[in-house]
Image (cartoon, rainbow, N blue to C red; front, side):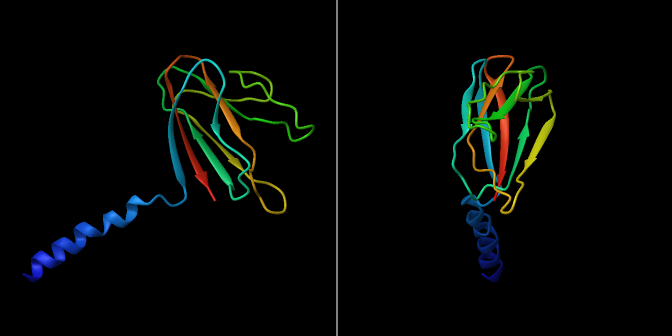
Length: 123
């Protein structure tokens, strides 16, 4: 009986992990036109890790607005203001400044339709 209770207790431990805690994981599918992948403002966001799990597709990410003049940034693979991520590569963006926040929304685009993109968001 004691073994059964111990076994049940061990089975219940992973159930508590079902509620997502930071870092938040966003597995996404993106296409060949820019789309918003993270919404803002989020003043709790401190670090983002973008990972391109594709074998051939190239992915680009960019903040939705410029920090300098709040002008929209057009996300494009190898485009101005965009961060190009090669296959099986990742890119980390850390917050800067007094509170280290990354509050802006982020956009993404891929060189092939139906491409995957994984994002880890740290608070």
